[in-house]
Length: 173
Image 1 (cartoon, rainbow, N blue to C red):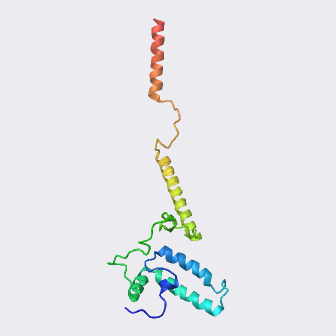
Image 2: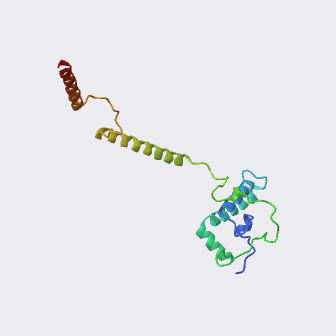
C-alpha cells in the first residue's frame, strides 16, 4: 500500500510500529509535555497543531482495535511475518532493562480516590463478615468460641459425695 507524505502516527511519537503499549504511553507523555501549548516555547499555533497530532496518534495507537486497523491501513502487519529486531547485528552492550516490563512499570499512576474507596469497602466487608461469623458462633453456642468456666458437674459432685460417705463408713468400722 502506498503511503502518503503525511507522517505516520508512529513517526509522530518517534516509535517503531512494533512498539509496546507501554512504549507508546511513555513516548506520548514525554512528547505531550514538550509540545503542550502551555509549557512550550514554540508559537501557540505550532504547539497546538503538534499537540493535537500527538493526541490523535495516541488515541489511535493506545486502542488495540484502532491500532490494528491503522496498521493495516499503513501496510504494517504484526501477524504472520517474523521481523528481525532492528539491533540484530549489534552486540549486546547492556543488560535487560526491567523497567520496561508490562508488569512492573515505574510510570504507573497511583490509585485514584475511587479505587481507594473500593479497596476500603472490600476490607470493611471482609471485617464485617468475620465479626458476623463470630457473632453467629457465639449465639449458637459453639464451644470453640466460648470461654470455659468451671461449673460443677452434678454427676462429678455426686461421685465425690459418695466417695466421702464411703470413706467415712470405712473409718467408722
